[in-house]
Amino acid sequence: MSISRLSIFTVLLFALLNSSHLHASKYPPTINGAIQVSYKHVDGIELKSWLFTVTGETPSPALVFFFGGGWAGGNPAQFVHYAQQLQQKGIASMLVDYRVRNRHNTGVAEAVADAKSAMNWLYRNAEHFHIDKKRIGAAGASAGGQLAAATAVLPDYGDMSFTPALLVLFNPVTIMAPEPNLYQPTHWTEAWTGSPLISLSPYHHLSQSLPPTVIYHGTEDKTVAISTAEAFCRKATSLQRKCQVVPFQGKGHGFFNGQKYKSQIIDDLLPFFGQHNWL
Image (cartoon, rainbow, N blue to C red; front, side):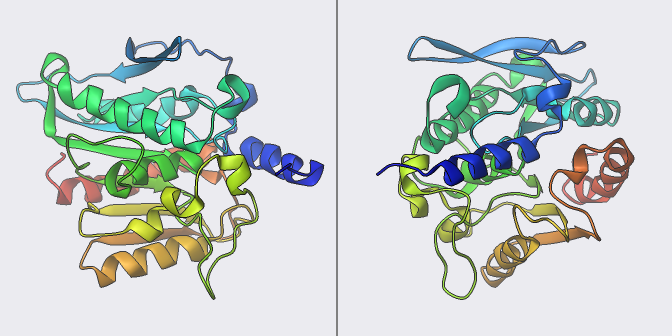
């Protein structure tokens, strides 16, 4: 099944909107102040991540970040500012590179597999980096939000050694498969993703494995509607899981990349972290 020119344009536009750092940061990035490690070798590709560690008497919690880019592009440097700010609060971070269509000719399943591999790598190496393996969470933007959620709820494309302690999502793709009266896919097809949509859709695999989750979402997001995040949290709540959407009025996709909102979101996250013994 071939993809129309319009479909290709839509996917590329989606990828562009997902990361303001697509042009601001070169790839591969140079991330100062971080420890660069290789977490996976696959099909001749070396996949790297960048660790912002914390020095202290006790092991620190850690948040693993997955960049946005429509599974087609994007840059691990997207969340450098967040990682730097969290480091000052005593929370370590890991910025993950994963396979994407434009660089590796791969689909969404490969990105999910890489996300799970990255989480497992940090879990296995937690002690070496003075990280508390019981307090490792996942975070991500848009397509990266789908990957973060996938590490908690998707059963396919690799096993997880543990369940993330919490999720922090930014305008995430949480529903990928058709859902009557709620959502019909417009940005991708199974021919493009390379896998059945329902197997990639966090909403359709929600269970009591979902950890406490907070979602930051622009109310005027035209790429990933806030209604999908709200539906995700409603379903999670019905399963007795903690999930909340923090709306940003009048803001669109990728608003959280703006300097104005980075510190605001970090400040908003501190009580959430405090509730779960991360501070």
